[in-house]
Image (cartoon, rainbow, N blue to C red):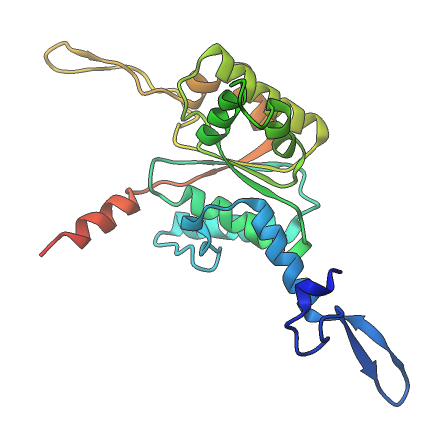
Length: 251
């Protein structure tokens, strides 16, 4: 323990240890400031965006019976970690709380188990990998991918958000397959439904293109792999962010 980290602690005086004394025993034990500093470091390593730092399962407010089931599933997952046999695939439209729930699970696991987890935005990850190809870049693709491939648990947020080029699909496949083979816990969120939708024909004969599914974005093989390594949590409802914005500007 670096004594500088706990220099302000009034209990241990910066040593990281507190003295225990009773009629029967004398000794020392780790000071509470040690655990506090460890948790702060793990949260920092997890790279949770400031917008989601407040998120917890407790303040994930279920307004429907379905969301109560979702919240209960999240609590059960945290309680069983690290003895879970698979990760989570959280599906739903924009603004229904997918990222809130995923971050909440990550934070709870860090606090409960001292796990070294990571939050990773899918688009940001791809952009950082692409930037690493620049000759003046200070980082390599391997350095960027290493924590994504090894940390447990990983939150991979907004899967499928990037246009599915061959390079994007190859990169996603490499990440998912690597984590699958290492049996690491992966929590994935996506705006794309896993159920393919048919094209719609209007009364005037106009054919509307079908909405893209998760399979359209990542491919059949990878979608199958996700179902093998994740349990599905589906969140349905209105865009909460849009409702808040509308309420803010109503007079």
